[in-house]
Picture 1 (spheres, rainbow, N blue to C red):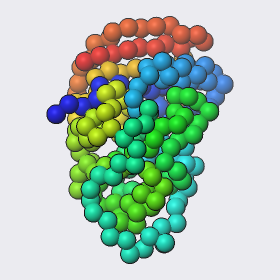
Picture 2: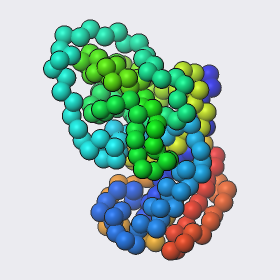
Picture 3: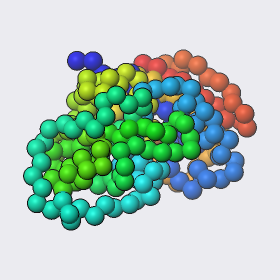
Picture 4: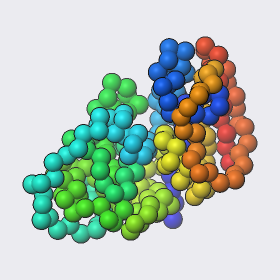
Length: 230
């Protein structure tokens, strides 16, 4: 079964850190702006992040009140809120916790704005959470019972939503899961001229793999954009 072409697009320090306070230093911001520009130019069908990244970037950690959905009985069937959107935001949320308030992301950056949300869940997500997602029109698919089956998720995204090109944008845990599954076709890495003293690496718990450098581009303010392909 077919799946999307997957590009891991990230911005990092020289030593490969993708989280930490250094991300907000003035010296790092030019690399971040280049990262967002490249994101837009890829013109992918979807971008994907883990639950922690989605909460930090889009929901502010909002926790929905699920009490009014108490007693709901939901089947473990995929739910399609919108299969005809122009752009999708794919959230890997194993247990179902991200507090979306509507079915789309609205953001000042056109690289994220108006993306219809798809939650990727394991079957152990609660009935109350599934009912909540349906009430606001958020799509969801199941990919595994207790642990995430990344390959199955990719096949479903291609089949149900016609997603052909997907930008994987962290954090390091979901990046590592994709890498171990052998699903990353291309790595787009913007590196700022900063060495970090803390933070998580590009891939958490990675496996041995090999890529070739396709292109290296020097950006402004001494940042570098390197494209690796399988």
